[in-house]
Figure 1 (tube, rainbow, N blue to C red):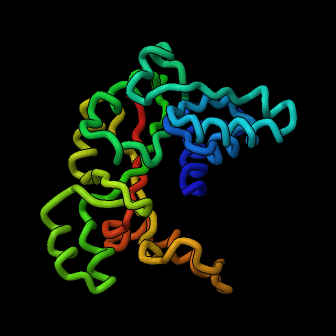
Figure 2: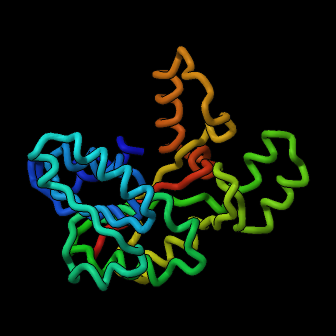
Length: 233
């Protein structure tokens, strides 16, 4: 996931350019910190107080130069218009957020609004076209059959969430002026792995296989998650 994002940034912007980045729903701030360490000016938007505290603690342990390049704002991703002017950012991330939003179109339109022309919109969503895969591979045939008929599912935390279909998001991105540029599959082979499982000895090969599958049809189409990259016109 991080490699895919870096690939898109390097391919779209001049080397060495300090980008203005907005991370909507930044969580604990791992991705935001990674980009701040790379030299970019990063704003993290998060509404969960516990996540914010964890992100602030992590940021406090960074060198002064990195601390100066990152700011954290408490707020909802649907309220970007309240916090930011149009065209304020070169890159906008919204990873693992849409699944918690019942009607995501307004949120997405707000994200496109704060993107500068030529800016990159990076989305990580639950794949609504592959909801039968996890229960099917686990031998839950009733769950697999149900997965064909819905975009409702449970995430790894046991929370009820919503998935997105590639065709629907492609149309939405075109409609808000940030048409789909490219997309990847994420967790093609590893979605059934149990959290907390020991790291396999052949981790490098596993990551290479996941990376290759995430770029290759038909494998990427059955990934648990989709990473979509749109570009502001």
